[in-house]
Amino acid sequence: MGSKNAKGGGAKRPGLLQLVAMGLAIAAVVKELRMPPEERTWHGTIAGFVPYEFRVPTLERAKERWWNPEGEHLFGPQLFGVGWTLNVGRAVALVKERLAES
Image 1 (cartoon, rainbow, N blue to C red):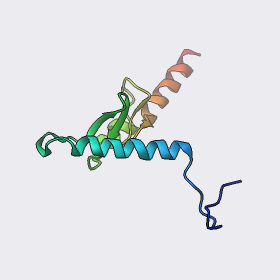
Image 2: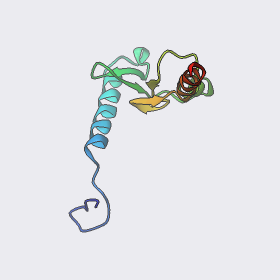
Image 3: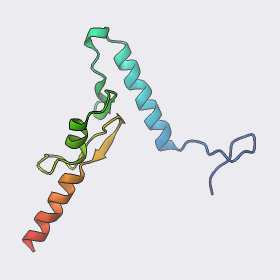
């Protein structure tokens, strides 16, 4: 079952994956804040390969990240936050391609 906090309450402690995600998010914010304000983009990569996106989400970017059947990648940067998200449009296109081959 889930772990409890030291006070005996029912709150769960964050898991390893959550702690890593929080650490990467903090590192990305620190990376941006260390740059001069005019050079901050609020999106990029941290730890050499983990994408982050802290710009206000737009409908255009949501479609690009979540529904892009012609996209090159099955996984891409999150719409907002740290890590990757599934390009559902690409996944559907791949399934359709496989079914057409059968």
